[in-house]
Each structure stands twice: as structure tokens, then as C-alpha cells.
Length: 117
Length: 108
Image 1 (cartoon, each protein chain N blue to C red):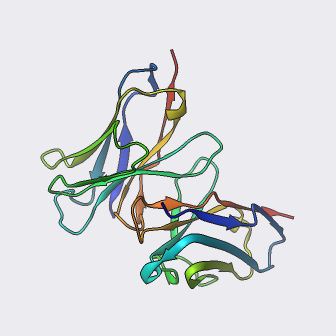
Image 2: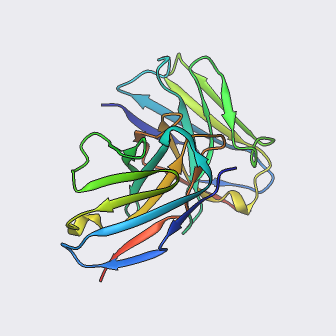
């Protein structure tokens, strides 16, 4: 059974870069079958799709974040990562990684990230 | 982008009753590329339905999905105590993928 686990700092300063990693076990990010996705959820609000990466590095981003976001895959570590630059308080959220470019069949537990000085 | 609007915002029902949740899209969702998720407090969402009407692995048959085009429905027959949660629809017919704002199903 595939499992995903987010990791990274829980506190980021405004204007800095948020960097998170999703470690995958029980499955391979090198598989051509799946896309690997990042989703976020601001406190008390709904879900926002950030984007996804394919095993070959191809990506698809939400236009609302496209200028600030990079999602990459590291097949040697069986991980994929999220970088979000120039963060503000509006980027405070629980960040989830998931498997799937369409419906998400598997999700990580989520990692809360606060943007504050 | 394809905006999804869920109704009602909150649904108050009792265990054993039937719940009907609606999701309306601003643009047609081709090939019924619509999913439903359940989220409980402090937990990640869980996939219930994909392809508008196909149940995900391990999902009880009291959950069913229907609809096409711009109007979709999630039905939960015979509510169990563990079904009280927030439900989200998501379309994956176009990019960016989008979610509805959620329907909170609460115990009456």
C-alpha cells in the first residue's frame, strides 16, 4: 500500500521560499502510471490544487501560483518536492501531497506551514 | 477555470437518514471527470467517488455518485455516525483542477 509523508519547516518568513518534500513508500515516483500532486488548505477553508509532476519532470501548475511555484521529482530518493517563492501570510495552509493527476487516490497526512516573521 | 459550487453549505441530518449533496460546475465536465472526497477534522481528504459514479477501493455501497455535464450528486443512504464530515467535489476535466467549497454534513 502506497504511503506519502510530507516534511519541511513549519514556519517560513514572509518573502522567503517555502520548501517541502513528499517521501513515497510502497510505490515508485518513477512509475509512468502516476502523477504526483500538491494541494493546500488554508485554515478553516477549502482545498486548492497547486500542481503536479510526472516521473519525467513534466509539470502542470495552477495559473494563480505559476509564477512562484516549482514542483520537481527525485527518482533516486523516491521523493517529489514543492518550492513556493516570495511567500506571504496568504500562503499559510496545510500542505498535502498526493498520488494522481486526476482524482487523488492516496494522500499524505498533511503538514501545516505558517508564514510569519 | 471551471468553478464548482456545492450546495447546501451545511446539511443537518440524523443517523439513518439519506443525504443528497450537490455539485454544479460553471463549465461542462467532460467524460464525467468528477470526484468526491470526505474530510474529517485533522485528517487528509479521502477519495470516495471518481468518474462521477465509480466507488473508490474500500468505500461502502451506501455512497453513490451520479450526474453528468454540469450537475453532479453524491448520495449517502442510511447515514452512519462516521459519515458526518465535510465533502468536496473536484473536477479533473480541465486544468487547473478545481474543488468545490465543501458541504458540511452535521448531526441534527
